[in-house]
Image (cartoon, rainbow, N blue to C red; front, top):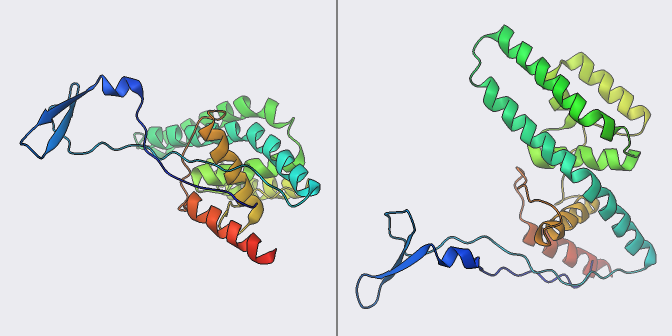
Amino acid sequence: MKKIFFAIFFSLAVSSFSQIKEEVIDSTDYYVRFEGDSILHSSIALDEVYLFGRLEFANRKEKLRYYILRRKTLKVYPYAKLAAERLVELNDSLANIKKKRQRKKYTKKVQKYIEGEFSAELKKLTRTEGQILVKLIYRQTGKTAFDLVKELRNGWRAFWYNTTAKAFKISIKEEFHPELIHEDYLIEDILQRAFASKRLERQKSVLDYDYAQLSNKWKNSKTTKD
């Protein structure tokens, strides 16, 4: 994808200013105090905001591929986000349950709840949508769908889940590597643009990569090929 410009700038919501009081310590130093906070701050931590350039494609086929991928990614991302949230809730609850029998009973209860919450909608997914979902689950949790099934149930059942998925050409062992796989980068690009436009609710990936560096890498890689 050519001419993707990336920049970071700082911004503050208007409401934030009403919660900040400026205090002069001496003639050269300025500090701020947030409402309800007794600590003086010499700086304010702000979120990064991305500026995106116009999408450009080498040909109609490449453009069509991107927009199909975008439609499918936007559709399945909420499920991956929900899966990550449920996993955090499960682990937090299990940390407070000491007895193995009670932990097993609680895990089974949650697993049934998750199945009931997901199953009806997931059955409607196409093969490619299912594969994107598997990748996004890894993006959000750092674990493959196979490993999550293995943890919630057992290795034998996870094996059969994977075997069944293979019959439909879906691997639940699939990971997400936008630094290595171009399609994974495109998925990340789609997500970042959707987060910036508020089309999707942002949930930070647990994986260690930098979107700005990824953009530069793939831009340079494509420029070299061209």
